[in-house]
Length: 172
Image (tube, rainbow, N blue to C red; front, side, top):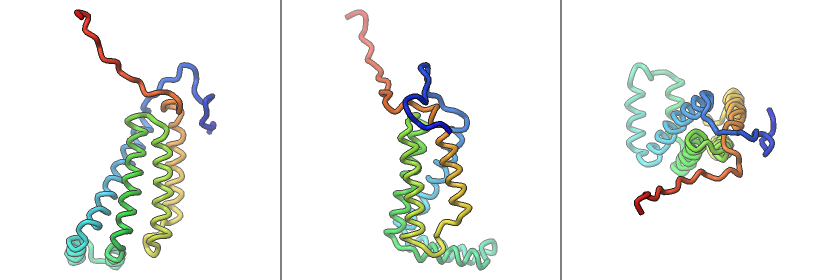
């Protein structure tokens, strides 16, 4: 993979949304959006969420030890930790949105820092059963590499935002 610098782009460089960028960004936005909503619900409505978990534990589909353990982990996390998780997931969402919508490489950096933040929050602030496994780390690194291969299709870092000039009526 070639480094991201001013020579990465050809003179006729035109930003474009590739299918790979579109697929990665949409999947990222769905995942991080759902996670942000989930964490926000636990942050804002802890009593309602604990009642929901208790109700789900009574359902036959969620009647296993692994579900009970997962539910207990979610209920044991404090509100401020859910706040951090929500902020990090929103940052990941914004990074993917900026890459897809504006074709701006800063979105890649926001996304990458969000993933690092998620790793830190889950491993150092929460720990226990919320730590990230090695397979999740490898998958995250692979997705970051896939995003980095899409940087050459985005705007140049110093390329100004195209401004639309207001049209002046010819009758004036």
